[in-house]
Length: 314
Ligand code: BDR
Ligand code: CA
Image (cartoon, rainbow, N blue to C red; front, side, top):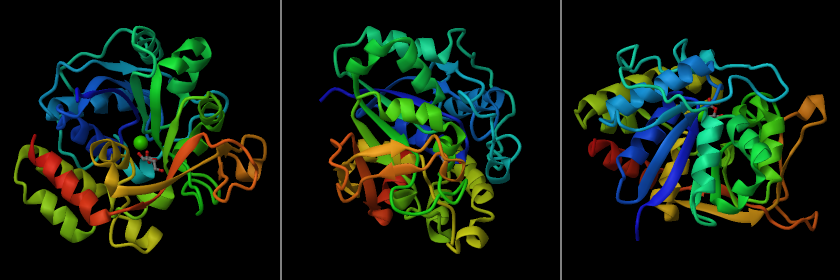
């Protein structure tokens, strides 16, 4: 089978960075057409810069990186420096300024142009941050929906609590209105919410396995993950941090690592208390047609074996 063409839409972020590295390490399975950046974990100026820093780390300065929307559709931007540090990639030890260029074209236009020139159902979109760019692309050019094979996203929580508010996960809470547009667009969805990402934790043994790879990529990743998981033991009572975004790429590479259920997911956009909640009809009580595969289980040891395998390739 030829490699699957994907666009990764992200807000790096240490976990976004690991997802990007895994994808770039897997050219036989994934053809990364471009990386589009959005404001999220840190402002856009930093997420687009971080995406280029990661491409350079992976030895892919040729990859096109695009800057997209600098803020959510309606809400003011709320960032997450407390988790990711001031740069968004604290701990990586990478040079601050990448030398590879940022593309001139807007990320939204790259998504639209790529989809419109593709066959029906050809392009896979992988949003790893707030869904602003994807929503704007759908609103600007609704015809792209027919070109999308799947939108595989990290975001939301199906059955458990949020991490940004008691109800909502960060990516969806940051731009709930964009997420709602995406959920209602009609493209097939695959959701990796906190239910599953909180089962893939960076324990000291797993971090050690990454460090022992012994390459510059492994050194940068173990540095950034050591920073990233510094306060999670206190926060979640776990021995490390959830490696959220790489779940999306891991599923593309090895789907049998995860279990999910076809069901309906909607986004709460009206109630202040639960704004950004992903309302997942787990037991099919609404009669709504399923619009998503919602993941709830991962083989976490298998997941980390895959992470180590892919990082070792770079
Ligand atoms: C999500 O929010 C960000 O902090 C991470 O990069 C991930 O995409 C987890 O809630
Ligand atoms: Ca992210």
